[in-house]
Each structure stands twice: as structure tokens, then as C-alpha cells.
Length: 488
Image 1 (cartoon, rainbow, N blue to C red):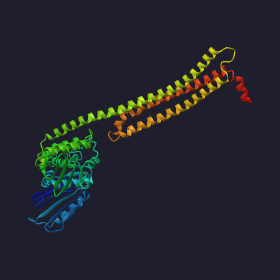
Image 2: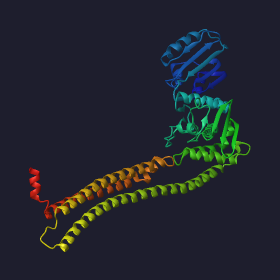
Image 3: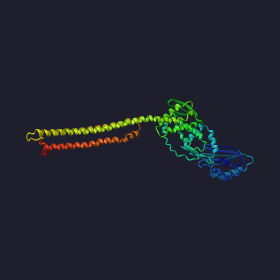
Image 4: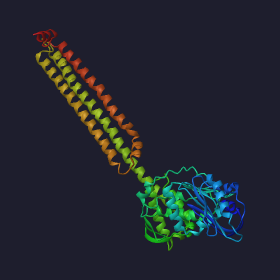
């Protein structure tokens, strides 16, 4: 459109030359017959120029001094100077006309002559297109082209667009995964990925082949173990069931394998499943299907890759279930152990009390049976023996409580070791899920502590009651004697 507007200032044109790329638009031609220039005719094409871009419009008659216009405000002065030059114009003299537009380095690039821009882009081989686009992406994360020519269809990827808004992408790509799972020798130079070139809108087919080819190139780079770009070729190495190495020329032949490699790339780096496992399986299957040329791989490879991963998951699921079973067995052991700890403590209490009561009752029975006179049942000897048994019960209480705390501490240590042991086999989140965030273990520890508290107070209360009973029935140790000894 700008081209046509500029050519309108002359009725006869010759030697028309138009070039356009990402940074420059240039049109030059000769004429032997000019129309009368007016400010409106100059502004008609200047207003089409992006305000961020700079321009230089020159008209030169034969070998005379060129009249230059480089801003919109100077249009009237430019016409005045030109009219001065044309006073001496003679019919047949050649007038050279030239317009240069220097495009600003921005993510928004205006295309002034789409057909000429397309000619420029099509004339580049794929490697030169890669170098050019890479330089642009280094300056700006996105490239947005807009044409002033009407009816130019849209085209876009996640980072590149022509007459279109950039699409909203749901892809959450962790680029650290690239360096973790493969080695790309030129990663410092080419900070690109397949999504930079994967078309999301292909109404305009003019860029599709080139972008498909570059999308395929970077898909392969981030699938293979080792790769590098040298002399317009991709050198690669795959360590699968078989080790494969070779080179692929960076040209439009890559487009025929784009769908296959991009689908593998997208599947490998998706959030579902472990990336390293998926890439490893993809490399194994590619190495099995590889024959002579990498680009001759059958499209059914992706089906084989996904099927192999499902088989791998099934094998791992059985191992995973076995692993979960082992953890549950350990938890059952801990639960059983906590019950045993409490049972031993209760048993200690029962034995202690039973021993004393047996002695206490036996003293009463024997004394009553053998009682021949009015002598006391609980004399000095029986009283001292009863107090000795109560003292032993207190010692046994302290020992049993100490032993329970030791067992509880040992149980906690066993549980922590259980979690540490399985960290090498399972991720922390999975361990937390299996162990219900320690809920079951905390319940068992709480059970021990609650039972311990109940029987500790029951044991102490029993000793106190038995002591009061001994004092009450003893003829040797009376309350009055205790008071006298206390006051004395």
C-alpha cells in the first residue's frame, strides 16, 4: 500500500526497486515526468509510516542536490525547496526518487509492502531465517507484525504474530527441565523452544512451512540427549536401547516430521508423569524404530512411546503398591507396638497391686485362723512388711513410667527412620499422603500418653488408699503415733 502511494507521485516510472525486511523498507525509482507535488500528496504516504519509525524521502534531479524530507512537519518546506529545484528542470531529465523507512527495534513491526516482505523472507534459507528470528527474539520476547496492506490473513504462534493478537497459552513450561534432561550445545545462543514456532493460527500459509520446520528442529533438540547446531546442520546423539548419532540439515525437509516430534516433545514435557522417565522411554523407542534417516521415522512412533510408558507405569504401579504395603506393614507394627507398651504398663500395675493385696489378704486370713488370743492382727512385723511392699510398688511405678517413656521415644525414632528410608524411593508428598501427614502415628502416641496418664493416677491413688488402710488397721503404726512423730 505504501509502495503504491509513493509511486502515485509520478505519472511515468522506471527502474522501480523495492526491498523490505524486519528493519528497513526501501523504494526507489526514476521518472522523466513528475506531477505537481502538494502537501496532501506527500502526507498521503507519510501518514502510513509508524510514528516510532524514522524515514528519509529524497528527490534528486539529474546530478543536482537532493531535496530531503525526514519529518512530517517539514512537508511544506520540502515542497518549496523542490519547486526551486524544478525551475531549472528540462524535459527528459531523470528524476530519482527514494523513500527509506528505518524501523524501530520493537516487538511491534509494521510491514509496508507485504508482497516484498514475503519475497525477502522466502528468499532466505531456513538456517538464515533461524538466525534472523533468533536475533529478534533476543531483543524482544515476542514479535508482532502488522501490515498496512488490507486483507492479509493472520498467522501466529505463542511468541510470533502477523495481524493477530498473541494467543493466551495455558502451557506452563519449566525451561530448567531442558537443561536437566538434555544437553544443547548452543543453548547460550538460541534461547528458543518449539512453542516459539508452533503455529496456533494458520489462516495465512505463507509462514507455515518455515515455522513448522523450526518447530520440528527445536522439538528434536529437547528430546535428544546431546545436540548442537553447526554449519546449518543439527548434530545429535540419542542414548536409547541403541546409541544413535548423526546430523540433519536445517532445511524445510524438517516440516514433514514436525507433527511427530512436536507431539513427542509436548507429551514428554507435559505435567502428567515424570519428565525424565518419559524422555527416557521416548529415546528408547526412537532408537528401536530408527533405520537410516531420522526424518523417515514412522508416525506410529508416538503410539509406541505412549504404550511403552503405560507398560512402564503398570510395572511401577505393582512395585509402588508393594512399597505402600511395606509402609503399611511398618505402621501396623508401630500400632501393635504401642498397644504392647500400654499393656505392659497396665500389667506392671496389676502385678504390683496384686502382689500387695495377696500379702495383705494372706496376713488377715492367717492371723484370723491362727488367732488364739486377743493379740492384734496387724502388728509391727506385718506393718513393716506392708510398708516395704508399698515402697517396692512406688519404685516399680517409677521404673515402669520411665520404661514407658523410653519405649515411646524408641517408637518415635523408628517412625522417623521409616520416613527417611522411603525418601529415596518416593517423593515427600506421596510419603505424606500414605502416612496421612502423621495422623495415624500421632493417634498411637496420643493413645499411649492417655493410657499412661490414666493408669499413673490410678496406681498412685491405689498406693495412697493402701497406705491409709495399713495405717488404719495397724496396731503398730497409728495416726496418733504419726502425729507425735511429725510434731516431735
